[in-house]
Picture (cartoon, rainbow, N blue to C red):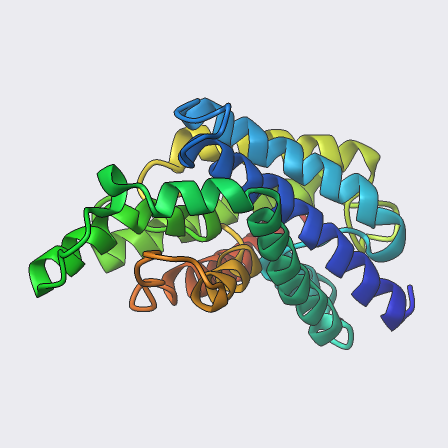
Length: 262
């Protein structure tokens, strides 16, 4: 695979991943969406199908890593680091493109949701408490773009992301790689999609299961940049956990693979 193929494949694949994954979060969250309040099952399966679609689309070009933690683990496993920056660049760019496309697809719903008085409060509420209350009410919109904890305990949140990523990456390394060992094959795409659904249902409750630094950081940046009214903050104090946790988890999974399976 050439560097251009890798970059294009990862950009397209990660954009599709975030468009469909963030899209199901928008569908469940936003006012005037036909799928509003569809629940966690819809989100978990929506992200699983997003992975499946993205992998099948991008695998011929790049091997469909779509996740810096996966790229890191494969580099540790194989000892080949030359293409890591190209993979990561495509993944983060694709994640930002996908998040922007979610905003385009749900533009009217974002506006209706974030200007609804029942959601963000009525006019004239300009004191500090009202601003904080308005941001808290608008906070679920951030969840369309990035993850956040239900209980903010940094050590637990970090551990949850590490554990979920270890499960994901081990599944990819042990049975999801194609013949060249560079990415996901046809069967591996289906296995990985089902693993993502399983992680969402079993381990997604505490933090929203980022398990992918690009999936979280790229859309969080887009959330900060988009001209959304009453959108609240982007929670940068938490942003390091869904980046560092999955990278640690990917490295641990690669170590386990090299010791137990190689």
